[in-house]
Each structure stands twice: as structure tokens, then as C-alpha cells.
Length: 389
Image (cartoon, rainbow, N blue to C red; front, top):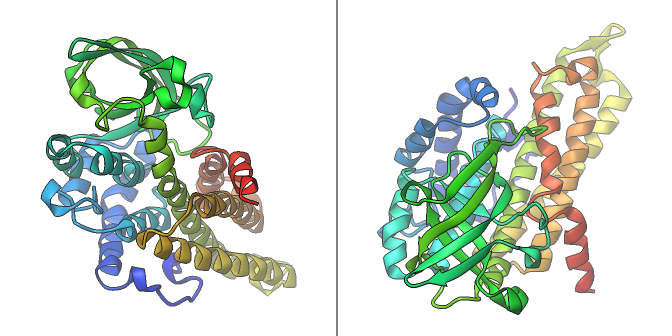
């Protein structure tokens, strides 16, 4: 297959050179050799084996951007981007290490105490702990201020009651950051983040592994807290009520990460489709020889190139501390919208075979759809952008 990483013919940005490029190659090899051969099995089982998480940890693919003193590799978001791009280029999009690496772990790094960092980050780096963040509730999605889960202080413990849904890594995760209300009367200022290690707690219950349209290999679950007792020392931050600010500070990286998955799948879809139309024949000639095919692919490659240049600029700005929430929202909404468009057009160029599950483009069509929903719907992204006008 044509290399998705080279399909646009662009030079590597400065942030992707040297050790980042080497990490991409290693991650690509790992995903190709360890995950891809078993991916159909993982799709059927609706989760990736815990063994693969441990192998990823041993290979240095977990917590790449965490400091070495806490078991990480001492990298930046550029390193996380390399890993996520490798996942997208190989086509094992349901392996949920991106959330674990660049969403869950940073909360501990930025807001955890020294004791919490030393306790949790090394285990996240090995895969002994698998991370999830429990934001969404049955009645609260993009509106995080509507969270109803409650944590009441009782001595040196919190008593947590509530439920969450659509939680990525929810069946496997044994390390979960819970968005909860410690003071419901204060609204957003009464929101706190509390960590639970599920192997050591009573009152925690997993619901079903949710039956999704796509990303079947990624376990996504309901979670229930019934008088769940968690030590007060598991609060993130030096006092209660900081959760909403913490979430807002970290959402730009989460939204940029969604853009990472989007541009990687866009490039893979183009590479697969160009190969396909060169081989497939109709009316006595290759499909690539029809003007409509050339025009469609010309449009898609142009838009993909624009998307990649924008994405590369966002990563460079983020690494330098200059990616603002509005631009991150632009990246999330525009790249995921483009992802849907490109995959749909590429499926069309496959004809009837594009609708067959044996062709990768069919799975990509299903997997792409959720990108416009999670991390804040694209409508919410436009609302945030609109407020800046």
C-alpha cells in the first residue's frame, strides 16, 4: 500500500524530525505486528486485550510525553501525535492509548501532588494501570456544568454516587478520573476531579460494553458509583472546586488529539483509494483514468494538504504553549468534518466494494462518525469559536 505518511508529499515539520520520526516508525511497526494481525478479533470481542497494553508499555508507547522521573519518556505532544498517527495509518483506531496517554496522564502531571505523580504515573506508563476519564452522564454530555455525580466528604473519604456513560476504555480501565460535584450549590465552581483505582474500591460497578456503530475494538461503557468510598487524598488539586478550570485547561489538547486521529485517517483513506482506483477497471480502463476520479481525488488531496498544514501548525503552537482554546476548537471541528467528507468520497470511489466490511474503507466510514461528537460536538465547537468574534 502507498505510505499514508507520505501520500501528501509534504516535508516533515520541525516538530516531527529526529526522535519523533523514529518513534513514529517504532509505533507503526508495533501496531502493524502486534495489533493489526489480531484486530478483527478485538473488533469481535469489542476490546483490545490487556496484554497488548502491557506490550505497548514495554515498548515505550505509553506516557511518551510524561517526564522520565515518573516513568515516561520525557517527550512532548509531538511524540503523542506520532503514536496516534501510527495508529491511524495502520488502521487500528480502536486501540485507546491516545486517551490514556495525552488526556488522562496529563491531568495527573499538571494537577497531581508529588505523591500522586510518583504513585500513579509509572503504573500508567507500564500499562499496569489503564486510564479513563468519566465526564459524560446520561443527562450531561457537552454541558459539563450539568454533571449530577456527587462526592460528599465523610472523614478522610469521599462517598461518591452517580453514573457515567460513553466512557472510553470503560471495561478495561482500572484508573478513572471522575468529574463530580463536591458542592452542587456552586455550579461550575463546585466541580472537582477525583481519581478512583477500581481494583481497590467497593461500590464501583461497570455496566455493559456499549454496542456502537464503529470503533468496535474500543471498549466504551457505563459506570455506576453506589456509595463508592474514595480517599480524600485522591482529589486532584490542593482544594475542592478546581475541576471545571482543570477541564477547560486540558480540553484544547483533547480536541487537538481528535484532529490527530482525523488527519491520520484522511491520509490512510486517500492512500488506500488511490491504490484501489489504479487497480480496479471499468469500461475497459482503470478507474483512475476517468476524469471524475481524477477531479475528486484532486479535490480531496488539496483539502487534505490544507488540513495537514493547519494541523502541523497547531501542534507547533501547542508545543510552544500557544494553542488557544478557539484554535483547538477549529482544529477539532474542521478536521473531523473533513475526515467524514474524505472517507465518504473515498468509499464512493470504491463502488459497491466500499460497502463491504472486508474493505478497510467500510470500517473507516463507521469509525469516523463519532469524531464529530465526542470531545464536545462540532456544534459546540462552532459556538465556542463564535464567542470569540
